[in-house]
Image (cartoon, rainbow, N blue to C red):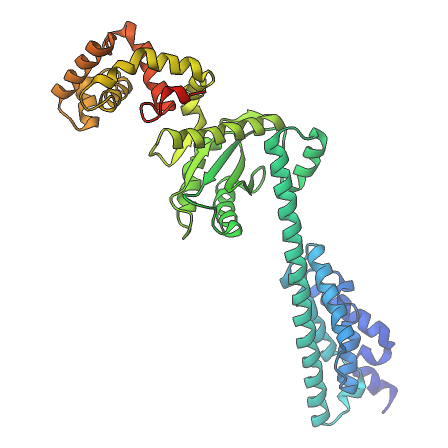
Length: 401
């Protein structure tokens, strides 16, 4: 064979073996979106050796490929990109094999192809396994960092500078105004990862994945979101999505008020948690509660002995009513919420207007305060709200405080 004919077979014959493999690696890297060619390691020599001698990779060779898969995951390269790198490298190597393979008979070429394909199968499978292991480790580490960050943010007593630095990888700008929403399952938190993933998907879709953090804490799901998201119906958005899960229904959602800075997150969390407890205590039926709507109860309960004294002094005579105080308390609560309209009160209570007027008169007779008198209304409304907050008359007033 002349020199001219050898040159026609391609540049692989003229190039040293090592340079040939370097060129194949570089071309494969370009095919895979400029993935690092170094991730191929000794994969190409393994393919070339298999094509020439039929040798299969040893366990130590495959272990090295698995480590490369882990490295790809740690570098943030997608699984599809790194697999494409390996498949493209195999394709290019086979097209550009040294002349010695091209001169073999058909059976020898078939055997070489089978050996190369076996190396490709083993290597790609090991690569994918290493990548998956690394991704699981990264997810576990990220989840641990996320949980620790959420704990420190909600506690509100950690080093500010360190918190800002730790929050940055999660896209949380702590200088902004945030609010905290909590989701409580009916019994216990179901599959935590599934619940977080489901909630993240819908919240990120609506709000974007910046400045939003979703995590689990103390059997609750926690969402830290920027202020203004209340206008998007964050609480109802969370409730609708979580209720699609098989377990955990019915969910109750509480949304704290927005506050600025790191300590504002802790404050909003406390408000949201208090709102959950208050909603349960008041037997509220609405699955989504806002701390803003329950402020009056927080004010009342700051001095429980005083509010218990008010309830006892104003409302205790209602115990003498036939049927107990509850129908009269319910009537006053609805009457006040309607602005003192007896017809609307009757409609909401599903009773006649005559029944409402009778109950209002009975209240005035028993306690000496007239619900229809604007001068008495503030005292009565505060006492009725206090009774709800203290769960009176189901619980004795002596237990308050």
